[in-house]
Image (cartoon, rainbow, N blue to C red; front, side):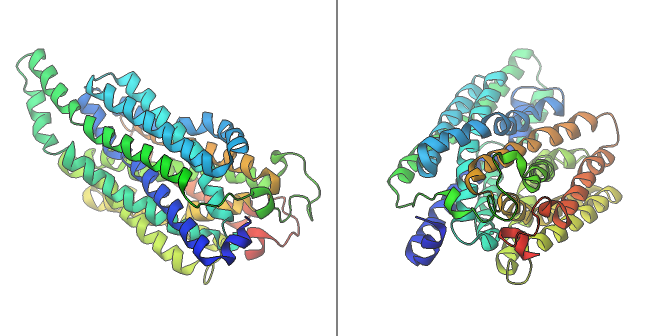
Length: 437
C-alpha cells in the first residue's frame, strides 16, 4: 500500500497514525526516563562524578550509532511492521537486564542493558520515522511527526514524574542518611534498598513492551514501500544515483540530527545536573526533565497547527534555531531558577527540529530511503557525545559557560541547514521538501 493509497483511505490512515502514536509514546517514556535515571545511578552505584553518571546517556545513545545500519538491513528482510515488533522485543530484553542488575548494583551490566534498550529503539526508530514521513504527502510530514512528538513528549513528561514517585521520593533525605552512615555496611545496605526500588517498574515496563510487540504483529498496520512512496527525484532531475552517499542534503542532515539530538538531550537529561550546580535540592531537580519536555510539547502543538499551512518545514526549523541561540545565551546570562527556566525553554526551540530535519533529509531518496533513514538514526549518537562533553568539562570550567559553548554552535549549524544545507545537491528538482521553500 503506497502512501497515497493510505492517505486516500481515511480509516486506514487514522488507525495507522494511532498505532504509530502509541509506539512514539512508549519509546518516549523509555528514552526520557534517562534524565532522572542519571541521578538514580549516581546515588545507587555511589559514583563520585557526574561524568560517570552520564554514561547512562552515553551507553543508551551510542547504540543508535552501532545498530542503525544493521537495523536497515534487518528491515529490508522483515519489512517495517515486523521490524517494529522486533524492536519492541529487544527493548523488553534490555529493560529486564537493567532492572535485574540494578538491584544487584552492577553498573557495567546495567549500562549493557541500556545499550540493548537503545539497540531496540534504533530498530524501532529506523522503521517508524520514515514510515510516518511517507504515510502521507512528504510536504506534510512535519505535521504528522509533530503528532508523534506530542505522544513522545507526553510520555516524557510522565516518565520523570513516575520515576520520582516510585523511586526517587525523599531522595534528599536518603542522601543525608548515606552521608551520615556510621559504617560502610550501613551505607551499603541503604544503597541496596534504594537500588531495589527500580526493579518492579522496569519489569512492568518489559511486560508492556512485549505485549506491544505482539499487538503490532496482529495490527492492521499497512506495509509501506519507501522506494515507491519517496522516489521523487532519486533517479530524476538530479541524475541517476547509485549510492546513498551521493545525496549531500542527506549527509548534511545526518550532522544536523547529530547536533540537534545532542542539544535536545543536553536540555532534557542534563537539566537536573545543571540545576544541582546552582545548589537546587535533588527533590526538585528530579522533575526538571518534565519541564523541558512540557516546553517541547507546546512546540509540537504549535508545529501541528502551523506546518505546512503557515510555515514551511525549513522556515520552522530556522525560527527554532534562532530561539535555541537566544535561550542558550539567556541561560548563560542569568542564575538559579531563571537560568534553569531558559534551559527548559530550549524544549520549545527543539520541538520542531526533528519533525523538520528528518523529512527534509530523506526527501527524494527513493530506494535509498531505508539506508538514508539509518544514517540519520546513527546521528542520534549526538545524545551520547554532547551531554558527556558537558558532564566532563562542567567540573573544570564554569558550568554555564560549558553549556553555552556546547549548545550555541549546534544551533548555528542547524540554522545553516534550514537556510542552505537542506537544498545542497538537490539541483532544480521541485519535489519533496525542496519544493516548499
